Length: 263
Image: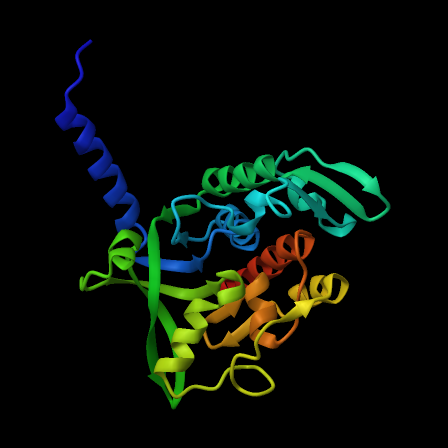
């Protein structure tokens, strides 16, 4: 059987832009493909919502790929183990409340599970800004401004395009990139003690793991923070290569947004 290169190109073009077209009006846009973003994407898509995840890099997984210092084993605590085993990741008990998993197996399986649940993933796609609307004096995030990551990396002056979304999850990790842009460009106050981004503190794993989930919330109308972005936004600590809080944060933000979408 012969192969026609033109048809191969046509198949990629038509299928990709069908996926893109179906993302013009999203229920949830997730920025960042780390463990919290992937978990939220899977759970929200499994609930039947129109969900897309945008990852600047070619690969998904955030810092989970490398485990600790490129030693590709991760640790999770007992209360979060189900978020790995539910999707088929093998987990071993190391000691009470300490469980290990292969970082590559965990990352690839979480990504696969999100896609198979119906979440649309756009890698090599950067979110450079948000869309704001104001009603009755209240500003709200209503969409995302996206561009190709290679365009961004090359520093080319190419205009972005826009997708609408009822809710946005900032899961970009330590950098909290989208939230920084929102605060820098607009006269807005966040749902934080100071009204701004509190900033990340140094290592304290026990407190950080608890606060990762506690700080997962709506920080501005229409915009939630999850994972390490939640701690960086609310001024808590970093936790290093233990990922249970990240997974639980994804579970929490998915449940909170699903409840709002259902009304």
